[in-house]
Image (cartoon, rainbow, N blue to C red; front, side, top):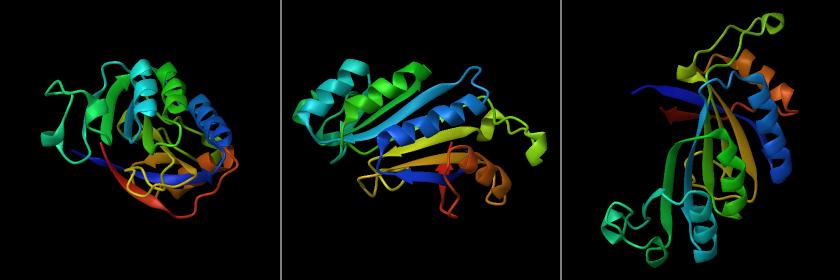
Length: 187
């Protein structure tokens, strides 16, 4: 297993601004064979119903542990709240309906990109799919939903901490700035 570095490039309380930044970064990336993954913590039956409408077959387990309920055991998630939900390898167009369904729930939405392109005028080399990701921490200060927040953070992934030129260039494309905050993201 390898890791990427998830660098925070924009934090905002405005979800519209965060989504605009995500769309801008997606326009820069090579999206050939791209997909989106979801992780969230759901506390309310209303949010759960909306999320299951978007992703009816999502994997979940009780936040207290799988022994307290899981999709694997065939339990009803509404009886096991709060629950952790995971869904992998979705088409890109599912991301925004999932985000809308979540309301105030903390989540991480990760776009698995084909690559970050070469940018000759900024002296940036091509980065392969292995390290080309984009994450939105929704209602959370981190990509693991450990620190709930009222704002949202956009992260760009790069292979190493010393790839600050790409981080700063991508941040500038969305009106953000790199503050030095990096999280290790297992892939």
